[in-house]
Length: 405
Image (tube, rainbow, N blue to C red; front, top):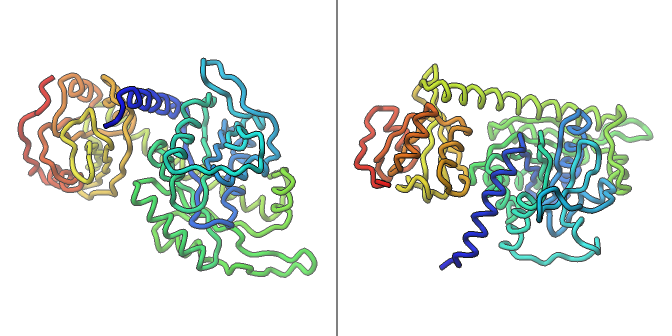
């Protein structure tokens, strides 16, 4: 049985995390199926490029065993006291770029960190809750390769994060990247797109192009998996040399920099499309009417794979968007810690306009109704997909409301 004080502390931290994330517009988790594909380089260059465009950017390195970001950037300085008591400010690397890494906290940069899963998750939660980030346009998160504790902790604690997956063209990398794709789908994390790194090398002496690790594999995988392909990056010795010197830059017209600027443009375009769709959904909900063209965003509290009968204490909420009677993929998100009125406001912020629940208190029902969200109470303990299908077919049967408070 969980210690009540520990639970209270954990819930308070969850509220801090939720509050902090509300001041970060986009969260991008840069991940890869295997090491050595240039994932951290892509994360660092992405943060630099966005900051150079005047965006407010945070770069959070959650590779706790082998952090690379501080060395790639030549990061100097350390965290400093924040304005709020008990909070610390991340390292200000540039006017628009803040950085946080476990290496910043360690006196010995070569010291080994030997931590098990629960401790890693705790550190990542602290990186969000206890660090006084500025209001950010982008939080770029660099995770270690694979699908272990760190990306899982990000998926659980940063529910709106989108994955940018890095691969090389060779088949062994593509086999591992498919595991990353399946991981994202299993934890219901949206995939922003794929980037193929080290795609070709131009000899500096003769100018001949050489496919060191084949080419085209990333684009083919994206097409097969119905994902957006964001672009390719050539292998350049100078990029590696700059990373070793702690002097990454995107200031010249090299083939790598030109290609990377194209990838950043694709990222911004994709996120703008997503923002537009979310704004439209929120506006429809606020207007208190059902969306046009038969579009709905249905929210269902779940436990395991079925409806959770207690709306206010659910561990996850399933969001399912429908279009003209067709059901889209299910997206699971962890809700904020339970407090009166918090969950209804959160559902509204997510663009939900229908809520299918088992039991719900009068206050929560009234708040949702005021926000233009249709509320269906007393739904059976079925899967979210089955409940949405029944709702669309107008055959969803409901019973009594078990919550009378």
